[in-house]
Length: 596
Ligand code: PEP
Ligand code: MG
Image (cartoon, rainbow, N blue to C red; front, side, top):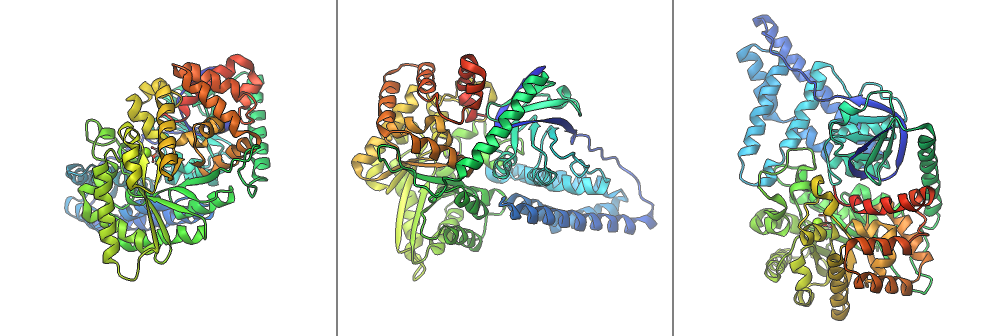
């Protein structure tokens, strides 16, 4: 048996036969076309545009039917139908008398270069959309349809990289999951896999060279491990884990309408993180009591020219309408190295993108673009309450500047304003946590984004697998910051939620309760598991656990304490099945759940 390490993508276990998709071998050679063949070659190209567009549209419709986000597919369709791309390619075919594939590849490169030369990183990162759009077209032209090849149902796909459109197709083909060489937990494909309930491990170096089609593989999406050719009893164990997990998830859903109240009567709000109006329905099905984090940046990722106000408006309105009286908190655009490229491109050109122009910094630098979003949100909530929060705030000045822009937008919108406006701030930087008192005087609520808070506090890039082992959610510094923010919020009489991935881990639910958190916002599919822990636990126990944890000096000691305390948490199947040592391993790799 070979054990390959990767990055946890989408949680769950899968056991099946590997099916390799080698997408890098897309060879494009130049062919001279006879003068009389030029028209036919152009027609062939235009037919490929039609066929690719129709296919993307079909995939989008299927994806929408299962509640997936179709925005990325829309972006690829925009590229495929792009007027400039079509005109330039047909002109090259005509002028140089070359085959359509070669002409298209040249034009794709030209467009890519234009994106690369733009100053704003956000626009530069749209290269990946260009690449995927062009690639789709090339695949149609060449007739090599990697993912359209009949992927056996229940297979586990192994590839260098998969586009969101591939994930939609793989889901339709009923594959169990996938392993890719690149990508991170915030890549578009992984986000989509989670929404579709597929298992995924990404960032497995040289996976396509180390796994052969037909080999049995186990994918452990929780711990980011792939076992190749496991011993039959081990494979059988994982099959059982998969069945048990499905059964347990099914059972947990039975409690979706019950309130999240601890045995000693503490009422907890369980909200969902979503990235599109489509995901809102999934969240409600899983028992969400509202949306605690609406990542509006996904909208912007797919529209290189910025999303028009009407689109912001209609999508926000759709989310508000689906939620009815339930609260929805919109986060303004937070484009960054990971979400901006979605793991699909080569990353930003800034030397240190996580510390660069992202979140509220980027929005404030481009007030004209920011205003479009703010106006869309304000108008969507006309006559009702609007909750908005700003990401990556590191100072009070930023909060003030963003608020003043928001209020100016509101004042300019006569007759189309929300009846109530609550403006919150995400606590994602140590600086924000340390000036929480000052922020609390001018913010209506806090949302603690632990994904970034951990990254910035520990100085560990959350998308760099080389420092993954240092990404420790249970580092004492993190717990102190969370406790501090919760305490300040309580003192100021404002709410404080946790909306980073820590909120969705049942193992940490009692600890977070004990640290003073009463609102958790998470991936919709994590809701039932967290609710089960909350309903079967006591707040008092959480407080005792938090006190013990806060008295410890190292992440390892706290992890041990939490593991010991949570030994009965139902989700930790591996721990139960494989005894104490593996339990230790499972918890030790717990941090990998959040870090790519
Ligand atoms: C976070 O940082 O915890 C968060 C919720 O924001 P994102 O993951 O989108 O950066
Ligand atoms: Mg964040």
